View 1 (cartoon, rainbow, N blue to C red):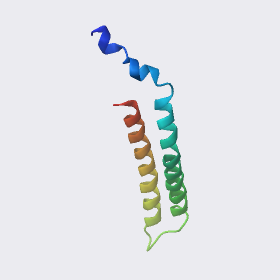
View 2 (view 1 turned 180 degrees about the horizontal axis):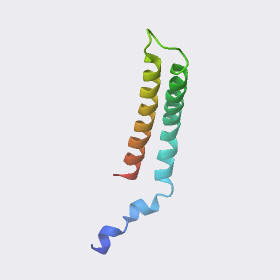
View 3 (view 1 turned 90 degrees about the horizontal axis):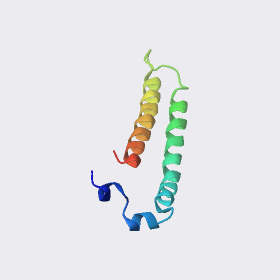
View 4 (view 1 turned 90 degrees about the vertical axis):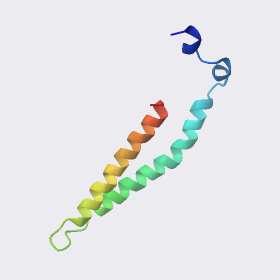
Length: 81
């Protein structure tokens, strides 16, 4: 690879903390959403079966898998993959 392709541009190197500031601002709503999904998943696990089927358990698992999937996608997006 060429050396110019590896090194960051001077403008990007001069913006001290700009990337960190953007990540910090976007972390608040994502944290609230994650905690809400976790709380809803825990609440959905509490009721008993409906006509012998664990429907609320299925809802709980769906919410928790959604939380894990969303966290994975956000991480991949932040890594630039």
